Image (cartoon, rainbow, N blue to C red):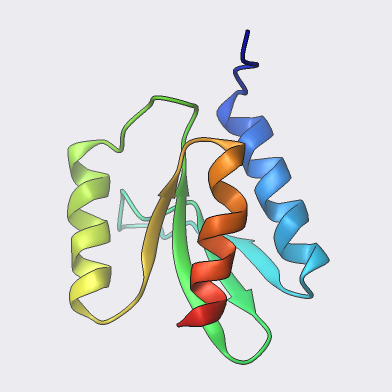
Length: 97
């Protein structure tokens, strides 16, 4: 039986993985602009991305989808991670951009 992790646990594993790569996963809050992704990921080599972290199987709310679409339209990479098995692939993709 697969272990289901909470959003908090997924976020902790994600931020630890970013730190291990020599980067930062900065908590992103924007007063007056709701729905922004949870983290701004900054990796060596001027790599930047926005990441929304969710509990397994959970989806972003409509306002979050809108904000992610806005960030993407500005040219920023945006990811949704809802499981620890996605973390390595997302970080690899951020590094490759």
